[in-house]
Amino acid sequence: MGLFLSTALGFPTVVLTPLLIVVAAYWIFVAVGAADLDLLDGVDTDGDAVGLSAVMSRVGLGRVPVTVALSVLVCVAWFVSMMGSIMTGLLDTTSTPLLLALGAVVLLIAIVTAWAVTSGLVMAVQRFLPERGGDSKHELVGRTCVIRIGEAREDFGRAEITTAGGASISIPVRTIGGEVLPLGSTALIFEHRDEDDVFLVTHLDPALDPGRD
Image (cartoon, rainbow, N blue to C red; front, side, top):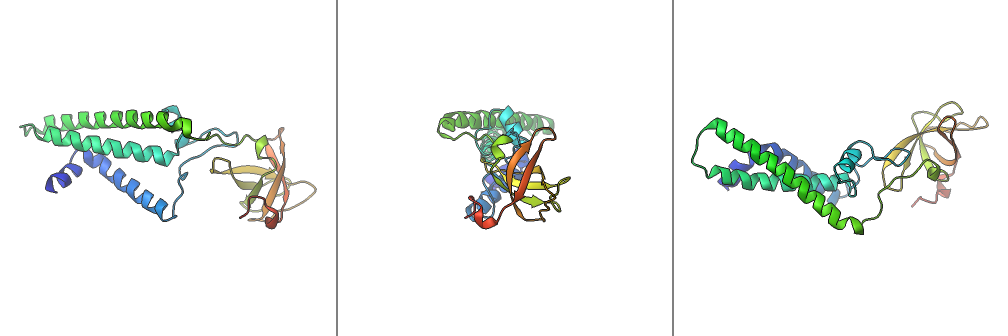
């Protein structure tokens, strides 16, 4: 137990140990229903990945939820770092510069190995995964949204909609005919106006929402 703690709290593993704790806490929250699997996923109104989703896509890890990819990366990196630290700890040296240099090498190897393992796992299972693309702007027509940030009018409006990928995005909306939709009301998207890139909406009784449980 002493070796485990000293290694987990020593360089370089100590860099990854807090991340491992965060990952463990996150999955506990997921297990009890207090957090979503797609917590860090994000797409814009064109269905393109943004934020961490875009970063993961660029490094070949975009076919699984960001939280899953990050969890595997952290766990593998932490394990490799632990094993590497234990091995370097067997060296008969007390030179601090040498130990720091070896620790940096172990950390680099751990990160590269974690990416390789995670990438390999994603490639192995991606054939069984559904497409994670978002919704194009015109595909959002006919969907419902919820008015956010004040009222939706002919000259202003923001609404929140959940894409097919499960991500919540904010879109610009407008009404017609002088209709005013209050904050928190449910609206139906009936058209996308290309000239000013906004969605036209009208009031919808929440009871008529086809996506309502």
